[in-house]
Length: 258
Image 1 (cartoon, rainbow, N blue to C red):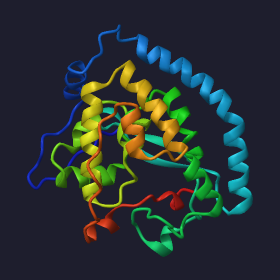
Image 2: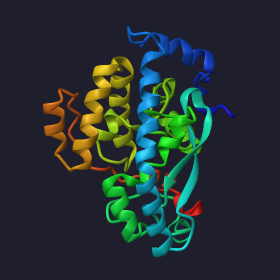
Image 3: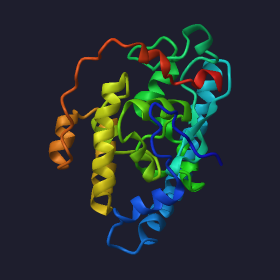
Image 4: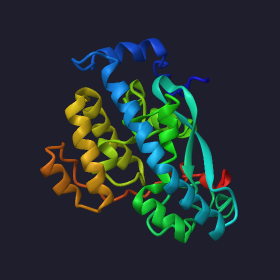
């Protein structure tokens, strides 16, 4: 697999698998290293079997209501900058970016199909990523996986952004539960702060609270209440998005793969 490199301006240190291993050891939990992944893997097997009927039903609805494949694939970066293929249910119209151009998804985005809005609201579109966990490319909890081209841009604009690649990405995570989807660079900075908090404090107790928080998040429980009830870090107040041409540099480009 390929290792992501960051453009110069100035050239930041290249992240390597060796550096990643050193970083992970500093945040290792006290229980035997194999226990936590083994328990998680067994849990994911059960979840995946239970999710198969839901995924199949949702995929059928996607195919019936809009042209294009039900499952789309996309390149993302995992631990150590290794590239892998992520699987998700398609929620946007096929090849929608040909008309909209490359940009981040926004509230009320017209590229999202009616069925896609339901899948996104319930996070059912994320269920195929359980297969990525079984393949060893992701974990249940970790930083949100990002596309290589976006990582290369963000790494030059946000100091320490590559630190989030020191652990496997997750289907859910502290930042995903407590903060809304990225819309501009400042929102990425806020999420990076919570990604760092998780990396430094990862363990059984933190993971359990995030999993419970994920359930509350799906049920639309307010973020402040989730944070207070589960004793999770309180995220900074949301800042108003600042006008920037950066918005058009990034996108949820599932339309090209649907």
